[in-house]
Length: 290
Image (tube, rainbow, N blue to C red; front, top):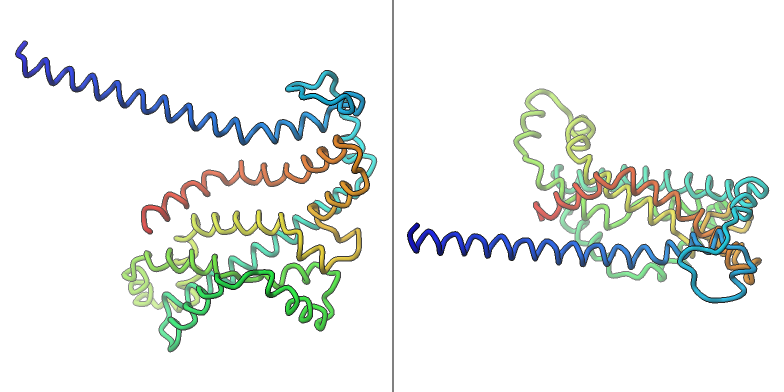
């Protein structure tokens, strides 16, 4: 074997060794970060099944000395108010997500695919709204909702957030990347603008619509300040407000608080597991086209 071949084999071996070390280091860092994020959730579930007599003694137990599901049974069977709160949150989040997807996609379609004067100005105004803090709109929104007689209702939470600049921005960027040749071919076949929007643009935009819907759903599920302002009836409370109510009543019972927090976070965890592939693919697509 010549010296050239030996040098090539050594360099190739060094390349594979460095790549292997890089992969090992990457996995160590990623699994370490995953463990750091997992510890608070494990602590939450661990406290929710720990009897109060062990919690009062203090100290940290990775595994509780004794496990009890009495508090879970209390919230899931004996006190069904949490089901009402979960239903309220699910209904509000679902309707809000649906309306946002429809309204934002129509706005983005009109800006990117239809010719009308002033569309660039409208897009600039939408983008400029990113600079306005949300708290500035609380008083005007409350006045408007109160004048419409919507206080203490689901629509008081849904309608003020029926559209958002973030969704318009994401969809505008995505719709611009759809080839115009497809639209021109559809118009030659006699498609109207509405049919192009419903039969071509929306099916091609399934990944970004799924990601946007997931973001809006999670954001709507976690809303706290605005529902707290416009809701007065306990039966209409959402899960975040209900959990805070339970915390104020059971301030001296950490296991009760942690159980309510676990119940409030489980639906979002399930939603993420169901749609994580769509979310990851949409993020990768945006990174490739952006």
